[in-house]
Length: 118
Image (cartoon, rainbow, N blue to C red; front, side, top):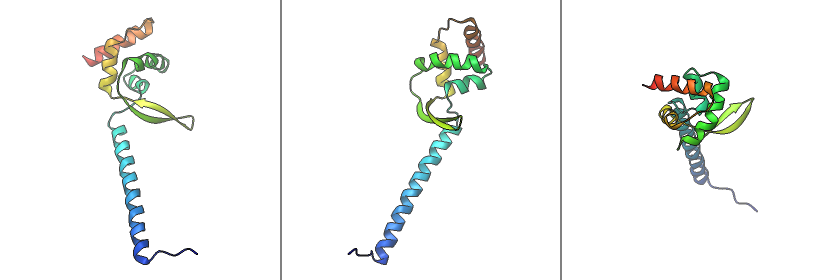
């Protein structure tokens, strides 16, 4: 036979659950604020700087190898959450300095982006 908790015990457990929920919400809120503060994927940084979609996707694949750090996150694509790594604009621009593209379109895009940074 199971013994029911007393009113005091139930109240304490309820407060503990409420505190856990508040901590989870605070963590999510902080993560959301960091995302809004400028953390984006490499391709989205490039697109926001004026590079077209296909060039940004192609450059991002190689730039990810050049950039260190980043924060693990999720991106929603086609209604599915997919894992990604988010970077600051400074990290992306630093990666562009060491990036040596071979395609002419990537070379012109890199030159354009480095001119914006200067």
